[in-house]
Length: 158
Image (tube, rainbow, N blue to C red):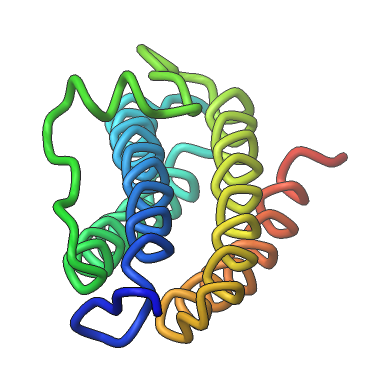
């Protein structure tokens, strides 16, 4: 018989989920800082619109950072919390000194591709583990972010 953790999930599967969530957390932290930088440094004709949208996005990302970290704790593990861990574990690269709106939006779209792909993988793992909490979280994130991808993509079209 397999050993269950405090919320009734198989401990080995919960450990694997927590590790994958920690990788997602690292990606979200780098994504968050990139969007903060876009917000601070944006220039050009769409400054006011993008400045506000980037603030809206980084506030949303910050909420998700906290939710993911708390989910790792709920699964019985420890969330990564050092910048060195974020950089080494993140598939999303740091973006420095981006002033152009189109480049910032392209960076956001690339980051969403990474997070959505990782969240789909986590959705599969969570389903296999019978982890409805992580499944629901990933499903909610995916649905919301697919719409954001559509909206941000529209700003790059003529």
